[in-house]
Structure formats: C-alpha cells, structure tokens
Length: 56
Image 1 (cartoon, rainbow, N blue to C red):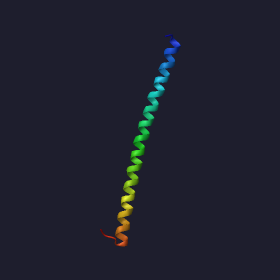
Image 2 (image 1 turned 180 degrees about the vertical axis):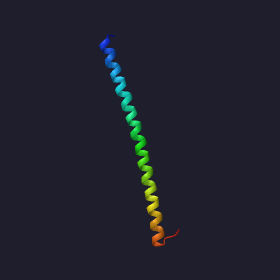
Image 3 (image 1 turned 120 degrees about the vertical axis):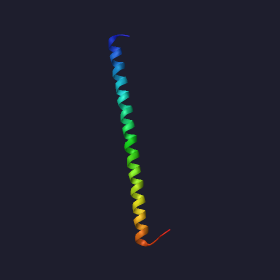
Image 4 (image 1 turned 30 degrees about the vertical axis):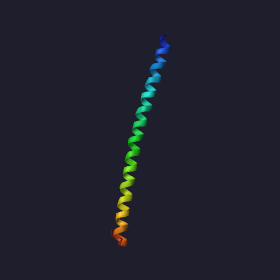
C-alpha cells in the first residue's frame, strides 16, 4: 500500500469510530428521555388517582 491509501484508510477508521461514539451517546440520551417520560407518567397517574379518589 502506498502512503496515500494508508492515510485514507486511517481517516475512514477514525470517522467510523466517531460515528460509533455518537450512536452510543444517542442511545444513552434516548434511555434517559424514556426513563424520565415513564416517571412523569407515573407521577401524573398517581396525582390524578389521588385527586379523583380512585384508590386501588
């Protein structure tokens, strides 16, 4: 392999690593958002049950 080909492959490899890191960050963010949404729904449901007297 010549020097230019090695440089191009190195750049492609670095780009792929960066894309993988970004995907992992997005997965963590998605999990936090879904967890927060589930907690919010649970709290709203609890308050509405308390306010409207629907004890179970």
